[in-house]
Image (cartoon, rainbow, N blue to C red; front, side):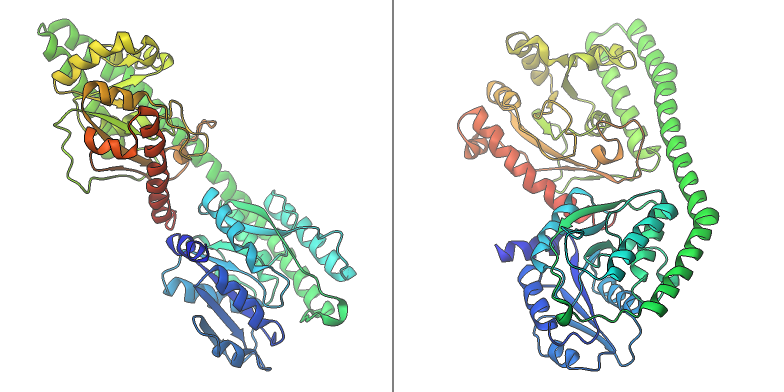
Length: 499
């Protein structure tokens, strides 16, 4: 189990950074427990004058960054992040060395990162209000939460927690970062201003008795610095943060409006008229159909590969050299309205099984009906003779085995229809694995996000090989879903290190 945790964290490019200053009583236990969760640990000894550095240097398997003069938590974080980037990591989990945080909550941070890739994850300490804390500590957290809301327009219940997961390639304001512990608030504010998603996830916290606590907080000096910092951040919020937010919303609107207008104009003024002319003047029936398929093929390639979708970097992986000449039942996970175009780019000899609303769509229904796309509502008995004819003419059949778009890009239950078709038609299953379409255009949203889309073409599965997943179509559906979940996770881990 532990090795599995290590593997998941490393696959996503996650390390742990522990800044420390004179924590010789707790540092060994914190690092030991952290190593049980993650094998990539960077400890930053911030000018320690007790035995902390000697303890760290005696622990095998960690990276130690040290310097002689104490420079503050902000500086320690900067040096830890710099080292993590040099070592090739994409994310860094930070936790304090005083034993307040539970390294056992690292899997919760990992789960939040998988659900919200590219986000800054804040470990919201559970039961904070009920715990015995100093009045200064309670005031500092409430004070920080209030000013964060004023400066960013977003609310967080715990802006002072040091248990966080940072997307290292999306950190802003590092060069301006203050040297002391208020730097953590500054990182939150600058990240919010630049559109980084900030997500809270519950974590445990331990507050020792007052006589056991190790604190380097200096009330007068530190509150003075916090006051000055918040004053500057409020000014910057007006002249820097607000304009950035307005610009970002404007660009999102323009990107979405441009993509929608481009699609509508292309379909109504170019593709549909061309299809109508082609169908009117070309007499040969097979030539008519192939002409429509080629139009769809060229249009899809133009939108995704040549012209491009605004804000979306599209890529294709074909490690097995698939040429789509041999008919197959092509399956793909389903995420977004963009999915169909990512399917059609591969070959003109492709027919998709669709839902009724697609078949009757006012934008492109006329075209797909003439391209021999069929609604699944017709039923197997009606469809099978038509599909056999298509296979005999060299066409592949594309099916989304999930049946509907996934709301969160996870791989939902596979229906057995695609595998029943492959069995009846005696053709290969050809899996395509799609990433990012549901993040660029989520199911329940109407605007485009900047996000990469990638589709990878897997190795064909022959009818004989398909038996390894089960002898019945429902068993094959279940087995292929498990395969897709593993395959999709590998893609996500690789791509989400750069989002």
